[in-house]
Length: 269
Image 1 (cartoon, one colour):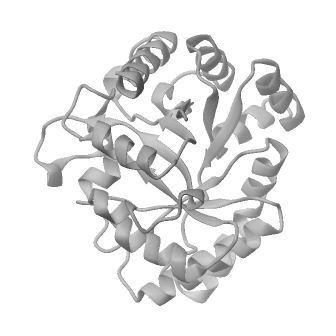
Image 2 (image 1 turned 135 degrees about the vertical axis):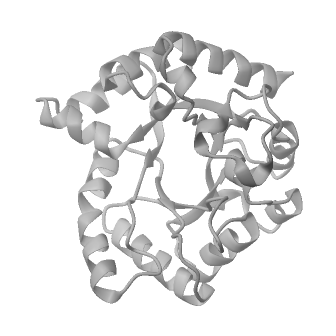
Image 3 (image 1 turned 60 degrees about the vertical axis):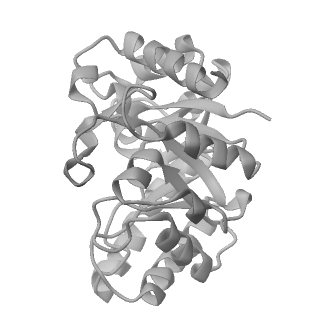
């Protein structure tokens, strides 16, 4: 049983989508994590979803994830929620056309009753189900409430939707103070994807997305998290997601290759 490796395209953000796809394939990843806005821009420039899907298939790439389902669907007033659930439909259509494994739904910033958070997630999942799309709930480390795996799983569990699951982001796991024990109750088939990354040694509460670095170059216990996931039988995608401006200034091919080498060393080392 082995993990599969993917590159989330934000890791090489300044490149065009064509360049991102090429760099991902050349570096030897099996998957590519897409962002809806870059796919929309690709289409606006004359590309088609069919052509993109064909190119990914030709290069042997799959898309395990797409970011994101946007905001406004959770802990919002009724009018805002209703608009968000309508506005997200083109993103679900995009996911269906590209056979994307799941769309990422980031936790809201607010604080409220978990029953409401779960109801809101369930509503999002029900709309996604109309398109045959799975939704992965993402806890966000700096959030006041929805910031750790225990709370995140409780939201997904209460929502009880067949196409609703959770994802693990090692940065948010660490930033929000999640523990390995919090992974135990989560059924393996409900972990849709893992965003893998490391972070610099700043005080935990000061870390931002820009502090993410290649795995093995920071302080996050990535190996321990992977060991816990492996022990659960998870063998899905680890998608490298970095928002590092220094990396953005480098060659996309170099960053993709460096990331693949670091991931391979971490997974097999």
